[in-house]
Each structure stands twice: as structure tokens, then as C-alpha cells.
Length: 254
Image (cartoon, rainbow, N blue to C red):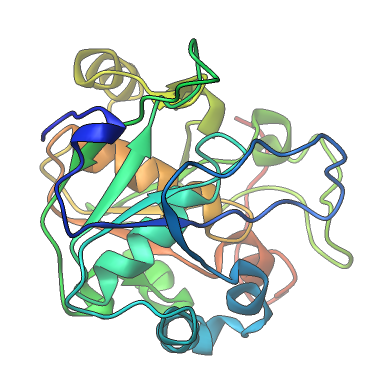
């Protein structure tokens, strides 16, 4: 892992805005970072159904002018919300991607992002899980971690999507996404290690991350990767797919 100020991001990296916001958000967005060369149409990615989302994302990346061989630095104007999601999908398609952290926290007029570099993977199936994969993982050594708020995980809060049951995937562990970061940066490796250890997460065993629709699950996957986990997959369908399907098992409570 390498941490850099924005001005030190290597030449040849495209800086891309990957902002996606919940439809209910009313707060203003941050400004674009200086030097932004591409804006990813994240709404277009969201419009694809779950089965087509990864292949659809590749088409959107192409329409945005991104090339598979071109290294990219990814940020969002919310503050580390949707950028990890796009970062994960870019890596799923073999791109060399950088997640931009920390910009604008203390020097808004002169943002100084830091970036965390990881290797890339050219096989989306190795980095993403389907509903069938999750079903097959139940009762095995594979750990399922849910990034939703505790009340939604427990089934105490109403789901924001219609006709969606409340609760969580049986046997899953809840680590709410906001606990992974401070401001526009993820916690350092040692702090994240402590958090995962407290939840008895084995970083050497297979892990599937989930959330509401795959966005914050990707942020959770980033944090796990930062801590050295090698076998992490994101369930892109997440609760938006699992919750409404009465044929799938659920649990409530913590």
C-alpha cells in the first residue's frame, strides 16, 4: 500500500469522479477535484439489473472514455461513499485503480488526497458474488459481513425499498460502513485490524461483503483488502436482491 498527496499521483493516471448519491439526499456535494478528466455515469450503472451490472459497468466505463489499460484514481464528491464501489468494479475488470482518500478534510482550498494502491484482477467472478454463491456459503467457513446500519441489520428499522423484508442473511456479521472511516479517509490498518478482530473476522478465510445494494459493501471490501484479506467478494445484489425474495432465508436481531 502506498499513500500519496494528490499532486504526487503518478503521471498517466486519470482522475475520475465516481459520485453516486441516494435519491433522498439533499445535502450539497463537494466540488470536483482539480484535474478531473472523466465523470462516471453511476446512475447508468445502477440502472442495470443485478445480473448485468458488472458487464454494464464495463460499457459505461467505455462510454465515459476510460480505457482498460489506463491507470485511474477514483474519488467521489460525497466523501468515500460510492468511490470504493466503482474502484472495486474497475479492479474486477482488470484496471489498475487508486482510491483517493482524505482530500479536503483540513485544507478545502488546496485539497491533498492520499491514495491507496492495490493490484488488479481480470476476472469479475473472483471478486464478486451472486445470490447462488451466498446461498452456497451459508454454514461454511465463508464469512458474510453486512455493512448496513445496525437497526436495518437487526430488522428493527423499516427497509427503504418497497416489498423488502427486514433482517439479514443468516449467520452474517454486522460492521456498519461508517465505523470503517473518519471523514474522507478509511481508518488506518491497525485500527481496522482491531475492529475486525473485535468481530472475530478471520482475514485468512473467504469473505463475502453485502449491504443494501452493493455500494458500501465495496467500501467494506476495500477496508478488508487494506488489512491483507486476499479472498474477498462483493455481493452486488445485496439486500436489494435478497430481501424481497421470500424463498431466501433471513434472520433478525443482532
